[in-house]
Image (cartoon, rainbow, N blue to C red; front, side):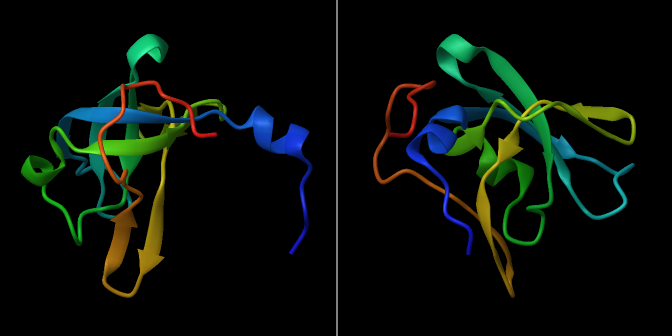
Length: 110
């Protein structure tokens, strides 16, 4: 495993946000949802996430998540993804990275 420096880590903007909206993304090649998240001072951003095996759109709403918001935007079919939703791949599906208790939207990981 390659090691990185502290300055490398500081470049990655990892922040907390709250899911506002989630809906099916039938145009995606693999089952996915379109997800909109409030990142407080960083604004509302959207992404596509392959989390359909463990979550429904209804169970995602109001869930606080961890997002990486400074990757370049990515075009996924007709949808533009503006951040990376973090999670862990398991045999059952992707488990979202979650917070132990609520923090203000936009709080940066340190």
